[in-house]
Image (spheres, rainbow, N blue to C red):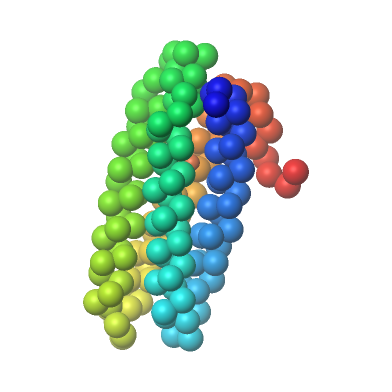
Length: 143
Ligand SMILES: [Fe+2]
Ligand SMILES: [Fe+2]
């Protein structure tokens, strides 16, 4: 796949990821009634993230970005580093989710998950912005 095809694919992926994250967000904010479901949703987000980050890193996408826009190299490296941090945090929350069964532990876990979701949204926002700048693809959503 060319960088441009990958950019389209990544844009589509961001929409799917946003839908999964929305589901988790809803479960986290109604945690008492859907605790098991929140953990299932976190697992779905984690599985999707693994695949999604691999798609962004293994294809020619990042190389193509840097080739077209050399001064973006440091942004691309920062995004790559964020992949590792976000995955590490999602895995950690999967593990601690098994132990946070009720009470304060549970709401602290939910808050940490919500912070992770914000961090992923911010990451995707930067990536969509980069795609828009470099490939001139409309990433405004809604199409
Ligand atoms: Fe990414
Ligand atoms: Fe992404």
